[in-house]
Amino acid sequence: MKLCNKEVSQIGFGTWKMGGGYWSPDYSNDNKYIEIIKYVISKGVNVIDTAEMYGGGHAEELVGKAVKDFDRESIFIITKVWPNHLRYDDLIKSAKDSLRRLDSKYIDLYLIHWPNSSIPLEETIRAMEYLVDQGIVNCIGVSNFDVMLLERAMSLTKKYEIVANEIEYNVDNKTAERDIIPFCERNNIKVIAYSPLSRGNVKNNTILEEIGRKYGKTSVQVALNYLMRRSIPIPKASTKEHVDEILGALGWNLSNDDYDRISKI
Image 1: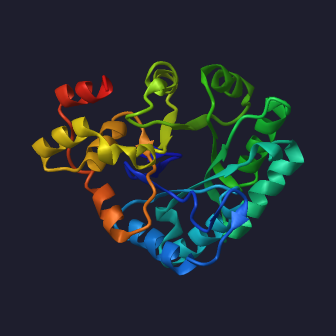
Image 2 (image 1 turned 60 degrees about the horizontal axis):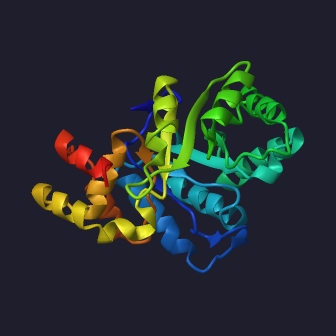
């Protein structure tokens, strides 16, 4: 699968709450998180998702340190600009700050984290396209945009396409299947699924457990395999054991009957 002309893994890795929470850094588990990200990459997952808001940018710093041991060209880094930084100059500053924290020459995919109706989207898109012109980012996209907003963003681009929309999508929240996912599919926009494990709830889903027994898989693996059909899920893990479980979602496919059964949960 290709995104921004780079081969990407079917599953990505999220970094929310690594290195702190909402704009608040926490340095106490840095080595642990760097090792986990390295482990993920060593296992063939090359999509790493982060944001300037995560730990006030500290998650980006952890990602930057983790990828140093790998060929940067083989890693696909996604980061996101917070909605209060969507004015032209603010957005460019945010991107440059993210680039510095990532200690990288470029950002693979830069997303508008959430829309902000108080700032003209035209101004934001103009700044995003400037970043591509300058080689700071390779591709641009959005996050948490509905069909109407995504259509508007697409209409405002002059030079570069919106290539991705990152949204909440999991077996407990399949509302995106009604409109935004079909719209993205029609327009060649990749869907990136955050909270793909429904904040841990999939572990207690008896239908997923039952289906999983047929394949020798856990409910987590079944849930991710379901999402992989129409998105790139970006689960997070804080142990190598959980990473290994996540990777068990790869290399097999749910039957159409089982897929349909999950779609009706």
